Image (spheres, helix red, strand yellow):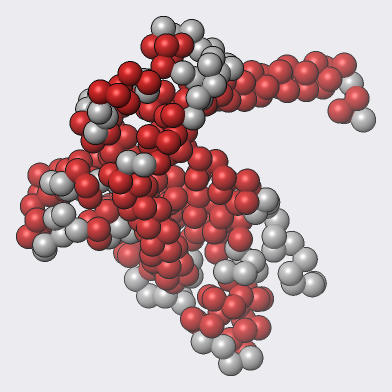
Length: 292
C-alpha cells in the first residue's frame, strides 16, 4: 500500500511534526497569558512569568469580575454574538436557497448573484457608511453592532455552494409530497447541511466576538462598548481608567495581571464553543441520502 512506502512515511512524519509545531505556537501564548493572570504583582511586573504562575494569586480575576464595566461589556458581546449569529444564519439560509437554483427555476438568479458579489467587492466607504448609520438613528444603539454586518456575502456563497451539492431528488420528493419551499428548506436542506451551518455559525460568532472597530466608531459611551472594544482601550491604548483601581489595590494588583485575566476571559467563550461545532465539520453528509 502507498501509505506504507518509505516516502509516504517520511511525508507523514514531516506533516505531523509541522502540525505539532503550529499547534505549540498557538497554545504557548495562551498558556503564558494564563500563567501571568494567576501570578502575583511582583513577578508579573518583573517579567518573571513564563509558562507557570509565579506566586499564585486570584486578585486579578477578583478585580476583573468585580468591575461592572467589564461585566457589562462581556454581556453585550455575548448578546451580540448570539443574536447576530442567529440573524446572520437566518438571512444566509433565505438568500442561499433561491440562489442555489438554476436559471430555469429562478428567473434572474444570475443578476441577483452578481449583485451579492458586487457588494462584496465594492462599497461606498467608511464615511458614507457612517453617515447612513447616523441618519437612520442607530448610533449608540445595540443594533448598530448587529444589523450592519447581518448579511455576509462570503457566507451566502459558502451556503449556496453546499445547497447546490444536495441531490435534487430530495427536493423533488418533498415538493411531490406537497411541501412548499420554506418547508423544503427547513425540513430537508438544513438538517443535512450541519457541516455548512456549523462553519457559518463559527465564522459569524468569531466575527461578532472579535469585532472592536464598530463599537469604537458608533458608541460614544464606554459603558456601551462590546468586550472587544473595551479590551482594545485597555490593552492597545493602555487606558486603565475603566478599572477604577484605588491605591490599596494598586499595591497588590498589577495592570499586567489584570490585562492577562481579561484577555483569557475574553478568549474563553470561543474556545469553549469551538469543540462542540468541530464535530460537524464532516463532509459527505448527503452520501446515501438518495438510493439509486
